[in-house]
Image 1 (tube, rainbow, N blue to C red):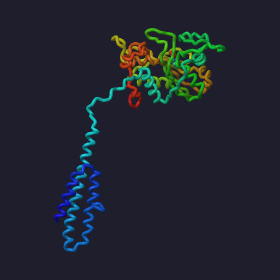
Image 2 (image 1 turned 90 degrees about the vertical axis):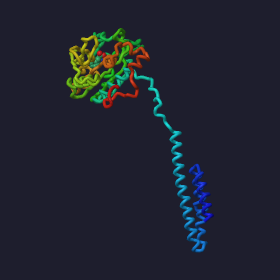
Image 3 (image 1 turned 60 degrees about the vertical axis):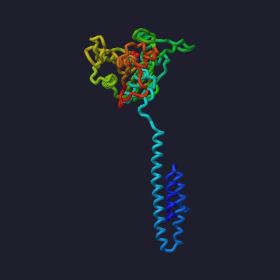
Image 4 (image 1 turned 180 degrees about the vertical axis):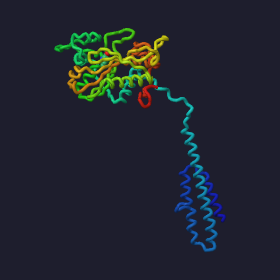
Length: 359
Ligand code: PHE
């Protein structure tokens, strides 16, 4: 009995001072493992006389239970201490200020192009691109603007020095319409594209910069008609400006490459000094459009008896200025970081018809 009491104290003290799970485990092995001290005593019970055996057995079993209980309790305690320490050391202070906002901004032109792509993308149009330096055929002739045609004077063209042996000099494209030509020359209808990009005209004042951006649209198949053109553009301007009942007017106009041609005006109010879209009785011109001229289709190898369609073109700066209240065109190209911080957009907020065009 005495001996058991001694053992009990010894093991409980050892367990109590074990400060790590590994130390506790080796104590368990030494006491209760296959070759452990208490296990050995238990197996020596067989050598005792039956009367002694019962009493010694009871005592030893009680010791064994007490030691395993103590180990279990200590283990739990150590686990809790360990968790506490981890919580301490891996503590995150949620009250600290967040990482500063990324400082770069997306230029309003890039943003506006993304918005236009999102809207027309939803309608099934995909993006087509072409080079800024064009030949005379794609920029003029194929678009039904032959040499000496007065329409060439409509656009103040930048000509490159004429290459030796070339019939005509290359030009900086004066509009995105040559991308419709490239698209139609490279594939047969159905065609549904928009072509955003840089355009150039030798013109510089309050409302013109020598480089600016346009987006062209082109839809060609067997049955596309003026009604589709109207529906598509009315939907576009109402979605882009986020004004559900924006008034839209198609006014007859002239472009050599479309017949009939129209200019599109949207309803606005100018009566109180400021321009307000979607109110009042005034009109503001925002884009040109029309049914692609049969001659243009033929110039591109498309059968004009079988196919027809519409095209439109608009200035991106202009609609960006209107939507985002940017008063001066020239500021778009001054690369003033303060301006960009004010009018720019978060690069991560990608315009989408589902999540919203702009935030
Ligand atoms: N290319 C014309 C311009 O720059 C716009 C336009 C495109 C008009 C397509 C009709 C059809 O003014």
